[in-house]
Image (cartoon, rainbow, N blue to C red; front, side):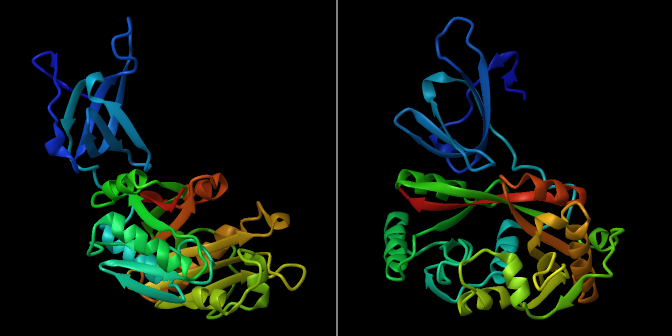
Length: 331
């Protein structure tokens, strides 16, 4: 990381650069003998009262005293990923939203309020893709009221880590007393290599609807009421995969939504008794082949940060992180 001009460290950023991607170097302990440097790269989301806030790719906000700065500069947007299809944040966010639709929704300016009886945060959170048509503080109060009327906790889904994502909104939420409750990665890949995997798909059953056995394996709810099946069935072209087990409940399941060039993979789960037998890969491969038959060429999925096993599986299939998203709720 190069900060110098003619051998001198320089601070070449100011409050006018709020909203831009920056790289800064600061002293870990300002003024301490032998103090070490620390570097931070991210979007400059505020510069108030001598304190900078930089939101990093992973969504974490770092507060830095202006007095500790020894160098700083504006840097270009993060380079485009070499793996996977080219896509903007907004295109991918809208594709993801169409694959997991709520039971009820209402616009708030260009935001969308979504509810589905509490079944998953994705279907029960505000999606802010644009201007809410009012100050953010007022929009957040409206979010609180809307979800309170439905006896649901208020959430806002915010993305970070790619060009055009929402670092400034994330910082504004934190300033309003909201905090991140969960973080997940949105990953993308070319679809054909997944369909070409050497996986035994002979046992994988592909259907248009999920039955009671599929729902029993999914286990993301207490009772699979109509709101659950409506969310799962939503999307342009929805497919369900299952691998029979010893009883009525499948050994493995998965869901895929085909939307133009995109195939989204969700709900890939394997009975612990059947793990390490390649069933997750078989489910993904069978669904990928179905999506390829419908003309899709690109793949996406979402995986929570703390799901190391799933992340390793998807690494092996060629998925790369495009951006992260976070669900914020008030303290």
